[in-house]
Length: 187
Image 1: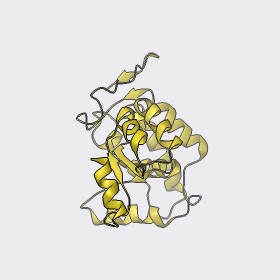
Image 2: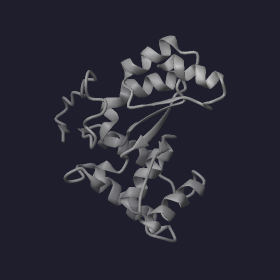
Image 3: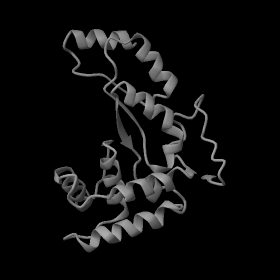
Image 4: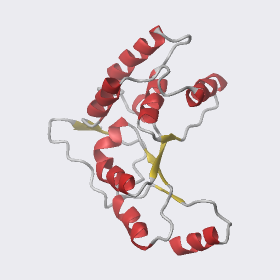
């Protein structure tokens, strides 16, 4: 199938190629035979899947494959309690709100976290105000109202202590879930 897509790219019918929910072994199978590597791998991506995606993210970095994230807001929208990340996000949102012209919520903090990691956000909303808020993030420079390096590190660290997926149907078969042996939890 990948060769067919590459042929379509050669014919000018496709500009670039990407994949979605590819595990390390799926991506490696493409890398081994590809004339054109995928430009992007779209997947569920938020702090609570970091421990699971370590090897995949390393493989993608090695080959210059970008990550596009869906379900980035899962820690605050679908996790039953928000877990240990919730108070961290709330504290950061309060700090950013204190110096912003408009309130900053935990969802915005997660999107700023994505941006700090140079991850492409795939978002959707029917709320016009939320859409305007998301759009303002796109236009803002990275150093305007962003997260500190320490805050990004804290979100990463706390996120890696919990494993939670809102879309368990993707990337779990034949891709071992992380073993969180430090007393952490799988939600």
